[in-house]
Length: 138
Image (cartoon, rainbow, N blue to C red; front, side, top):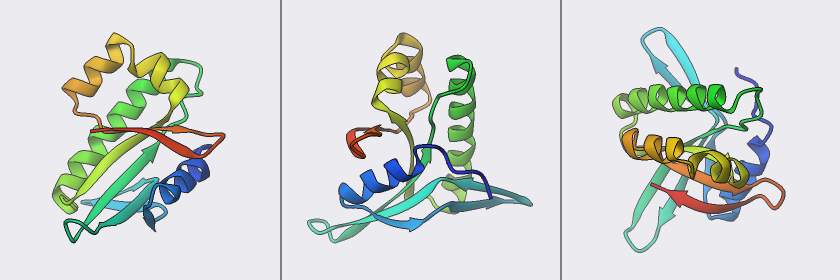
């Protein structure tokens, strides 16, 4: 099992506050003989449509020595997990959860905007201290 991200509990609590039920902690993926673990799986019942919405959330802290190395790792991991999920659980949407400070300094920059558009990144922006979701980007 992988180590928990330092903001794991903050994102988990923020999702619960936002009306989500945590269904997996972590969310296990398997492709061939390879096991992978997305940080969280969650579901939310949408009363108006009488449907259930399901997501998986990969949490990234971006506290390494290089912001660009952290970005390459996070996007690569997102693409890998999304490819596997498209085959194993196509009804579930993958999100990358990042702190608002990280989003502002990296994803609002041209490189971040390029990746959001070209790689169709779904992002959850959260505030760690208050454990709230600030914005969903799909």
